[in-house]
Length: 114
Image (cartoon, rainbow, N blue to C red; front, side, top):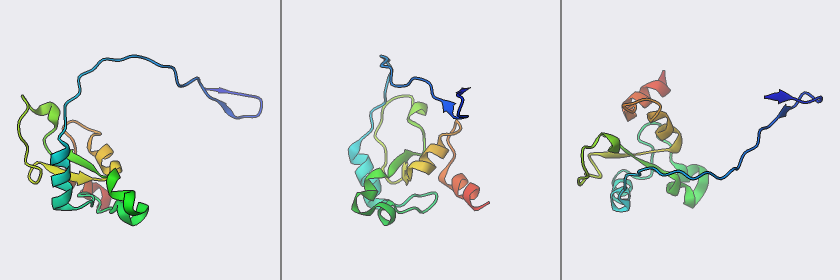
């Protein structure tokens, strides 16, 4: 980055529109709902309850994490929302995907507690 005469960083242009084509795997809203209904809107790694911080809209930010990445599936199949999905808060979900294969909820808990 460049620095102007007032020692402030000069930002670069953002917001240009580009067009991209990519494949996206479909996710089931029914599986998401069943997972959250079973486990509750509580992060399976850090224990965060978004409702405690953000009120009634808090649970809507909860992510549902596939324990086996969809990218590792050879073909579409029915998933068990209880055995194959877990709720993670956005921060823990982001951390889970910092490596391939993703960190497990247990590994994230160990990282947090160390």
